[in-house]
Image (tube, rainbow over all chains, first blue to last red):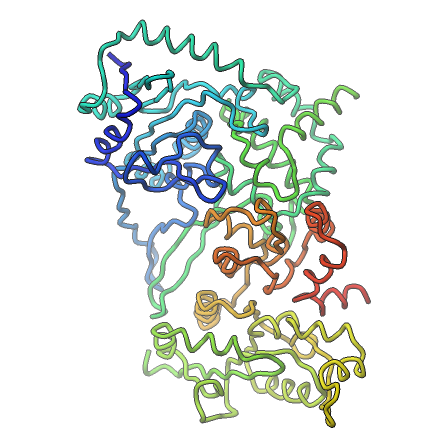
Length: 347
Length: 252
């Protein structure tokens, strides 16, 4: 049995159950937006939310992460004693679960990243299915991330008067299996049918705002390298780096060493970096491979829609819409893609 | 370390409020840690002794009058390394606003009915007068950055401040963007390194660390204009800490 029910009034009972063994992280309100933060009970959770300012990647790959320590003069760095805590990420949107799948692909690609690997092992993912579109900026339907598919341990779906809980992994089954609040009155086949009907209904509320189909996006980019759209985007961009910082799949980082006040020992850290920053593609001797803002923006889009397909056969855009919401210059991902489509049609 | 010769550090101030030097007195334990490796020989803010033998010099304030110019040149000739410390020294800071006026206008505004005036001078960041080796920006400077920079300079690696926008550090803290709240912010074109100090404390970014080396001024003007700000307000926002540089660029 992999599908069970939970009464809506028992959500806090579930959270308290999870808290016995795990720290629980969930979306909470911050002014008019949302962030992922630790919660003590269901009352603090904002289940109806638009994507959080930073995506869940901050728990897999923190903005600043200690990699090790060193002593001046030593040849080798000492590995870090990394402490992780069993943690549940609760209420993740399906687009963010897809984003985690992208990180999975990258950080487990040979050679696997040991820091990511260790953090990943301590994290349990509990999704909350989106029954409504977030806002006018999300492109999840085109990117096919609006329905739960894979990559989560537990998925919660709002079925009107109750929640449907899908256990999708061993840890998911273990956590729910010991939870007294759930009801095991249904059978898997019936609940699956119920979910199918819910999804047929919910899709009617979602609009597609991209003029290109999922299957055509890669081809579009193959023809768009010299498109005028990049100049337009470059002209408006101020290289603030918001789009990459908030992206659930951007994973570029810089490595910095800093000594302690004793001037003898120090720490090595990795810090999120961004391809939008002037210094990012500058190499020794001062040559900059992407000097223009238009080149840097184009690079970002190609990393999401073209190079990632070539290398991993996966889009690295989840359609969450964060880059569009966070852009101070109002550069909208869907507008750029629609402009590219128009421009290739005109050729 | 004790048998090693300690680096002799001196602080000098020119046209400024001395607020950046005052920041150093809040360093507490970090200050004591640094004193293991260096000796402070000139620091008007916190000691009365003074010496003219020093290796590493922190110059605070803008250079205004001819005798300031002479003084900073003499300091430069003694110092092995010179650090421009704080906004007034790095970019001219708010003193740059003086460049909007002629000598007479400035005196009229400041001294108006008083029977005496003193020389007004012409505000310049330190590098317009003598060679500067390193910069520690900010109004005031941020102690975390100062400690980081000093350690790095003492190690012989020097210090390069970030050349990316405050937005990077602001997003790390998951602040709700000020533009989202209908406020105006200089963050997107201002050099980071402060840890988004003001924007994380219910304030806005005034641009005290100066513009990025290659800011998208037009793009940012467009953003601000879209939020309903007039060209005049925009100019004031940019001028507050960047007047010296913007004026120099305008005059080629």
